[in-house]
Image: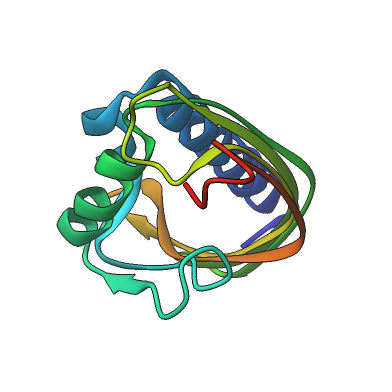
Length: 152
């Protein structure tokens, strides 16, 4: 891959990740689904112990109910993207997210403010970059429970 093709691939992956953040925050679930490879893996074990999921339909089955009643803001910064070949790439993104759940939701917490990194792989499928794997590694999470003294 020449330098121009490499730079175009890196920019395409940056656009892919920007769409990921926008789709999650706008609750555009079909749009989010389209960003993943069908056999993608999604590891959020730092948030939900043991939660490593394979398959885009399973990923959505977990994400949608947990975020549907939340207002979320996800930011990604300082991408480190390495094109390993014409169809594969690796990426690391510094991240910050803020999530607030509506009163009466099933969430045990009122809000979450997190910081960390996304560790990802990407695969080019039919000329389009897709997320092949995503692992969220948290550095810090600040949580506000609904009722600090009630246990909820």
